[in-house]
Image (cartoon, helix red, strand yellow):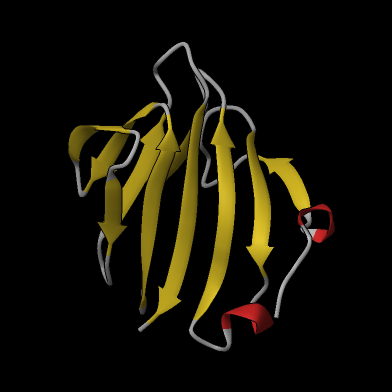
Length: 114
């Protein structure tokens, strides 16, 4: 299976009551994840914008930082993450991420089922 980039749906919206709009390009839909997850996306967060803090139940979400810097909330502990870093939030944990820099933050987000 393959998907051409121009066929990937994209949208801008507020995520989990975060600040501003976040650009999300879906790299696979639920069917494309073969029942193992619900999201695989390229996410772009402009300076001053964020994904609000939120929990995960019966799933794990990974962020792979492709470009830039963000402040990652890891269950209430704020950690600065940079290009190449990986963030994971498992069952029952809470996370969010904010771009407090002056540059764009890009990441890959993957949510896999328990």
